[in-house]
Image 1 (spheres, rainbow, N blue to C red):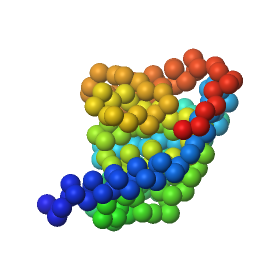
Image 2 (cartoon, helix red, strand yellow):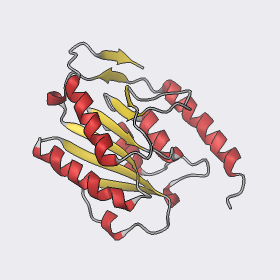
Image 3 (tube, rainbow, N blue to C red):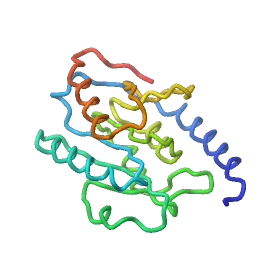
Length: 189
């Protein structure tokens, strides 16, 4: 059991709120045919879902859309299927500081990459992934609607029945992104 976990997590949330308040981002999205890059934030503690993400990656590659996945794996050793994959990076526990903030060059690079779309697949609300999603410089953020959250960081939220199937979730996201055709969607948050 981790010493003072809730206290340290509370401090981490306060630190994130202060960083997010200084982090201004231009929301921009016109239509799916203009998307060239997608970032995915994923709870990698569920290795069975990786197959569905790989299929999604392949489908997007065929459409000439670059996909980068950043996962959070709370265990000590990564599953073999996660290693040596060019489009996947993983935050491990040794890359999390005392306040549960990710502290690695890969995470910083991911946050600062201006993806056209960021897809949040963090259904269990792991704080290191919430940190990445909130600070991401992506033009448009998509996530699961959360009735309990006071702060919604996504520009588009999708509500699905639990348990959420990733394949269905990704399919719904693409469906709705294809429906949006607004050349004037530019705001600063």
